[in-house]
Length: 614
Image (cartoon, rainbow, N blue to C red; front, side, top):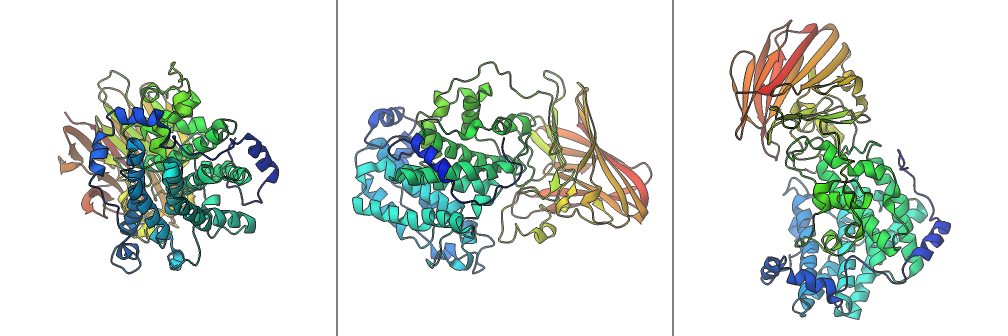
């Protein structure tokens, strides 16, 4: 079973390395086949799925390295590292593109372009994201950091060497190997030997970084390193340290980082697994952990309705699961997600890692899928008890078209916001109200003090209370305690105590009750009960990207697409006022509709209900 806390740096396990060495194939290999082995390549070429790509590649130019973009964050010309990071990753994509084209055609039309692109990357001053280049030590060749972008470069370069085979000049190949050892392989081994993770923090990180970096590092090693013992060492590194990435998932499979980062992290985990699986002929399998099956079911479990997923944490309301990841997990684990089990994945050319892994025979395509569909999620609800997240759906073939997602958790989850008690409401195929999701990253966005600068990360930008005019606090101690749950065929209830989220001396209690009804056309009611030792202000909010208007003193109309939803507000012992503001922090703007009690209260209740508007 996977660990529930991070495992530490430890010396290389020489006994396990010896065991793995006996299991490894004799020669290094990557995803797919070298371009001189034509069986699959010719089938891909003749499928017609790559015709448009090949036509467009004829006029494609390799992206240039821009010093201005690389330093745009540090010199203040850009608010974030996005400009420099995009430039860096576009260059890796450029090498991938030419490699794809040459392997498909095998006419030497792109061989020189591949060589030139490879040389460009080798001569590049840094392989890391500008945000990760502290004091520009990588750019100055003072030290080498292994992180998301440098791991991408390593795996892309290794795949290029493998796929192109003898089309790569021996001198260029050796230069590439020297660069891989200098900037990737040696820093990782040195971090483990010295127990100093300054250059390889990903080893002990418990978020997507762990699997993304391991996939790049271990994948590159297994693809190009001739020495079998060395490949065994890197296989052990992948096997041992990948446990840390799994810590970010609860035992019930919930991903606190949201569906977007699920795609990123688990997408690289399956690449890591496939590399090791193929290198050992299936005798070392990272999918053997029981927790992985729960993680595989995260996607169908977290779906609200109609392919819409809650934008909790740093996810976007537009994020969708990567079907290749779900297909890979479903087939390998016999989960029985039938809509994914029959998919094929040719025609994609964004990289020469996952796209080639999925286009060629792999463990998933060779596995026999479970056709019973018996492991599908309960259609009415998904409850992640450890995380305090409930997704409630309508009865099949009923007039109800409303689905909701509600969350507890704590305010120190990976990529999370100060959002205890947040929720999302979907009507038909429209997200009508709720959590706004992520905003574009800036240079300071991951500094916890900026949770009070950016409303979309602090609780001001979420449909949660402000208590005595205070937002929620950051930290694991700010947690939602599940007080009660009651699930029936027609109604789901969950009650959370979110008192600890507010550092307010006079606060005695804040409880939030969600009640979702499947009766008729459906209804969600959100009720906040609060108590103070002295009278204090209390406020809650509706967050929406819908058009909205006031219909009466206590009702609002939300309109999005063809859908209309009525919101009814009630506070039995106090009057309330409404004040709205539009929030735009780089992403798609949304409206915060604040609901203010008109006077300080010792205790009280505020309810907000959502129903279909006829």
